[in-house]
Image 1 (cartoon, rainbow, N blue to C red):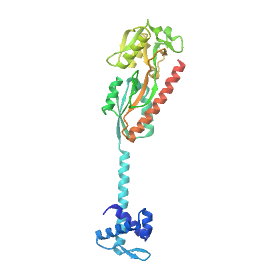
Image 2: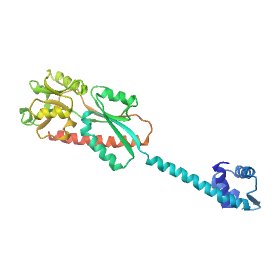
Image 3: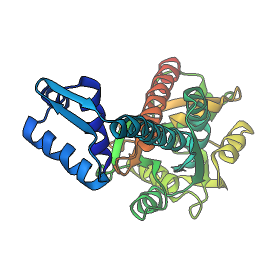
Image 4: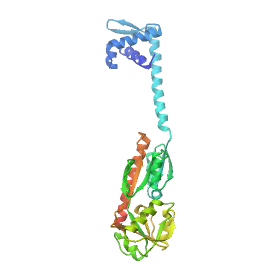
Length: 307
C-alpha cells in the first residue's frame, strides 16, 4: 500500500464518482478503478459499493476513509516539519579574504548578512597571496573568497570584480601631497619607501616592485611591515611613502593623502571567487558579497575623485 493509493481512495470517496475522481486526479478512469480494486484486495474487504451513477462507502470504507485522511495529513505534516527544520539549520560557509579586504569589505559584508537574517555560520580565513587562496578554493578548503588580480588571467571561478587601483600613500605634510589628482610614480623615485614584508604579502611586494621598475627606478625600501595597518602607520609617521591599493584608505587616516598612479600597464582588481555547487545559501552569500563589492567600488571611485 502506498500513499498514492490512499489519495486515490479519498478522492473517489469525496467525489462519489470514479469518473469525476479520475478527472480531478488527472488520470484515466480504468487505471483508477484498477488501483481501487487492488487496494480492496490488499485490505481484504470491499470499501466501495458500485452503483449505476457512482459509488458509496461500505462501513469498512467509512472507517478506512477516516484513517486514510489522518495518514495523508500526517505525511504532509511530516514533510512540512522536515522542510522547516532544514531551513532552521545553520549552514557553514568558509570565506577567504585578502588582508586589505578584511578592513574594506568585511564590515559591510557582516552587516548585510545580519540584515538578511540567514542561518549562515560564516567562518573567515585571511589567506594570501591570491594564488594560495585560489588553490584553497579549488581544494574545497573554502567556499568563496576575495582575491587580488594583477596581470594574471581571470580564473574561471571569478563571479564578480571591481577596479582597486594602486595609489601612493603620502604623509599629508609631504611636498607630493600638496598637489591633487593622479601622480606619475617616477616623481617619487628619490623617496624612501615603506614596503611590505615579501614573505608575508608577496602579492603587494611584487606588484609594488613592478610598478617602480616600470616607472624607471628601483625603490629604496627603508622600512617594511607585514600588514597594511603597519605600512600606513609608518607613512603617517613620515618614514616614507608606500604603494597600496585604493581600498586600503577605507579605514581613514587624516595624516595620509592618497594619489592615484597613472601611466602604468598594471591594473589591480578585487575578484569574488566561488565554486558553483548549487547551494542556495552559497548563492545568496555570493549575491551579498557581489553587492558589497559594488558598494566598495563606488566608495573607492568617490575617494579617488576627491584626491
